Image (tube, rainbow, N blue to C red; front, side, top):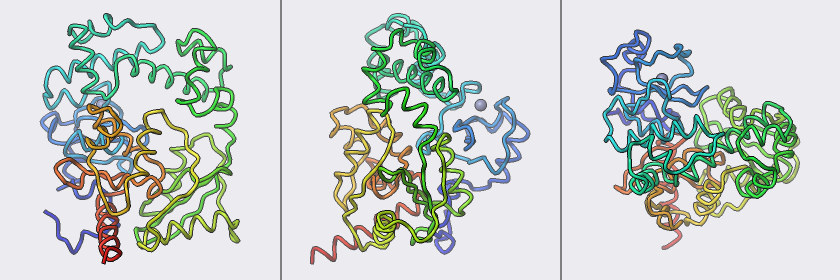
Length: 375
Ligand SMILES: [Zn+2]
């Protein structure tokens, strides 16, 4: 469908999916319901995707990404809009739709202690059926989901600089000890550190040219926290701000500290296929599940690929393939956490946060290097 000549690696992933962005944009501006289900649009500033007729305020065009399928939007890290419920527009199977509604309810009531029966009632399903379907659709149990929502509320409260104790009670944890039991694995830091540390963590960054386009590298004093690609340095900086809104971002100036220069060199070499093994220190905050997936990805050998389902199997959570895809889509450190080595079960390339063409180039190169090494 695309002229291979024009299919440079610099293209954005969405470019390969938009036959006519102008057409889509006009439909979006008109809020044309006849386009519902034909395409979806994600707003990069909010991380939400909608159907064309959504009543929400029209976003700036530069912040909009178009998708033909809801799944593509989700793989790119967008969440369905709670207002227009884009999934309902394409008449997904009723159970999935019910589970989505129930999950919205759980999120909206994250601060209240909900019983499984109450959650199941929202979906009009039996407790047993609800539990099983929920896990299949969402990749986690209803209880794990509710807890993650509570942690989200807590993080938001903490970012809004409320007192830590207020924030913990506000988030529905009920006691200090309950939340401290969780934070080591989930939040990465204690609530006090998350607020004060998250706010003042200095991150040094620099953008360089690489074989895959502009690449930005960001690091704390503990390790790399950001390796991403984009067309322009402005986009890269915007991505960095989005990931670390509270951090102290400092552009790195030459001469770079030895360690940082060594990391940069290793990454540039890796992109060129000259340094297959990449073991660099990381400093990441993540949910327990994200951490599990990301750690596992680092064990997939250079030159080989696995499917989302295989990764889920390996983590002993066979129904979590979608959640694995989400964890890949939210990877902040390209290459070091090789999410490009995960593909669809059908062998298709599937999405890549930094453009499917970059993924193709990386995989082709890894295969070629491995083949030559095997000779
Ligand atoms: Zn919407």
